[in-house]
Image 1 (cartoon, rainbow, N blue to C red):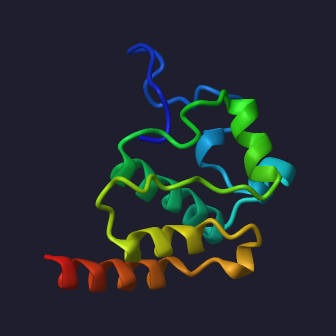
Image 2 (cartoon, rainbow, N blue to C red):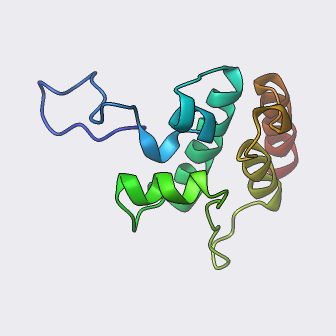
Length: 120
């Protein structure tokens, strides 16, 4: 889900030289520094993609998406969809600019389990 596969030969390869920009955290874009908190940021984008049913920053090219993320902007959740507010809140916490402000993945997992138990 994090990259477009344009042909059978491209399968398994990232299309851009720097990685899947639409899902990348600011530190990965600025310094190519990756950590478990980088994955948390990316997972927030996956939550967005799953519930909104479109790729992050769908109206922008990769450079435009990177500019928004580096400026501290975050994805806008559509108000007309019936997305559980707990999902929006969790994803928004994953989008924190500073890695230390993002939850650990184990906390994300626990919150998702609680949301599923309540909703389903």
